[in-house]
Image 1 (cartoon, rainbow, N blue to C red):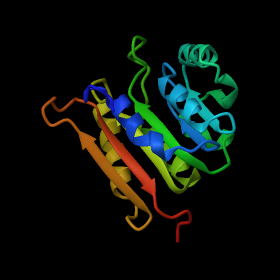
Image 2 (image 1 turned 45 degrees about the horizontal axis):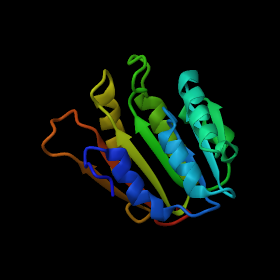
Image 3 (image 1 turned 180 degrees about the vertical axis):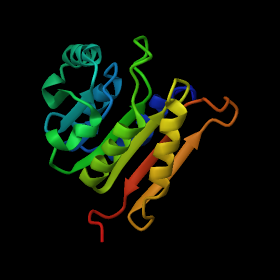
Amino acid sequence: MSERLQDIQGFLREILAPRIAPGNTVLDLTAGRGRDTLFLAQAVGAEGRVHAFDIQETALTETRRLLEKQGVAERVSLYAADHALVRDFVSEPVNLAMFNLGYLPGSDHSITTQAVSTLQALQATLELLAENGILVLTIYRGHLGGEEEAKAVQQYLASLPRKIYSVLEGQYINQGDKAPYWILVQKKRGEIG
């Protein structure tokens, strides 16, 4: 378990690790600095596949460098594309998908995820999600447009049919109203209907 509860990503990786099997196909919809992509590449093993997306070449370069350093780059397909276009690149069912909404730490804070494309990416990802598959979002909202994106995501996920999806939210209650929080979605049935 992550030693610090302040480390949301470490906490979530602990929850997700036992739910990823070697050979799985997974998504990192916001590659960023590559830490989640690396976690996923290690978890799916040599027979698995990670599809990782980012719109910033800096993020993809850092992710590629990290994956190569750890010897797992061949397990990952990197796409210089908006996560809303996931279906243009991925057609097979996925077992897990991760999003970190906000901006790339240490970079231009004016380049952020946006509600419209994030909602498109969520819808496409839920369509790709296999039965019992999990989607996890970490939502950072302390930037311009962050609150609006968080509200749009929350409204969309709250509207999902409960017979098909379970949606769980976790947040700090003593860190202020701009603190990051997480949402887990599990698809209980593979087919809608």
